[in-house]
Figure 1 (cartoon, rainbow, N blue to C red):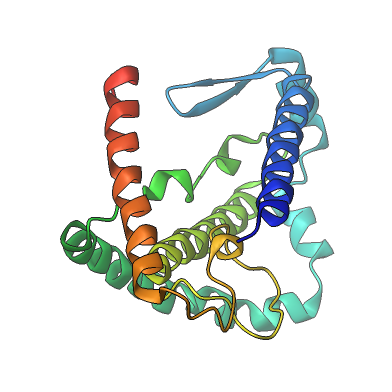
Figure 2: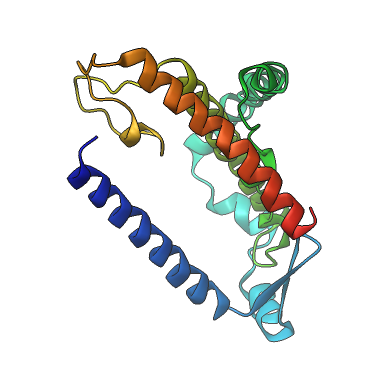
Length: 207
């Protein structure tokens, strides 16, 4: 990777960090706190949420017919999703220690907090929690797969692909055969350093 590409990637990372800070500042204006993983709103905000809450009966009257028809298909997907979750978790728990790769923490991807929103009725909360699990689990699986790709085959594709994972842009260019195996070992060493970084972070934070 040439210096110009690395410089642009560093700039992208800095902008993403800045965006995250702005988003966090914006969320802070809504006035809520997180206490033991539970989101707690100020009483005035909570009361306002309750006023706009749509009751279950009224909610049923507003649902489009096609949503009712497809509901069994949507919720039936929980079975393959849960099985995928189980198998990929088993994979990383057994193989990542052997490869020297830091395990991906599920809690960083699967976040269930929409049930604390008072403006959602019980059905809307269930829908949101299902979506949160599905999207979070797929993100969790994607990171596991990305780390596996970095270990075995950190090579870009010849064709541009959409929505690449965060590690992809640092991979080797397609057709770059110069010292291939040495470079792959360097990628593996980077994965090993992530374990040490994780351990040092946990020690410093007491987690």
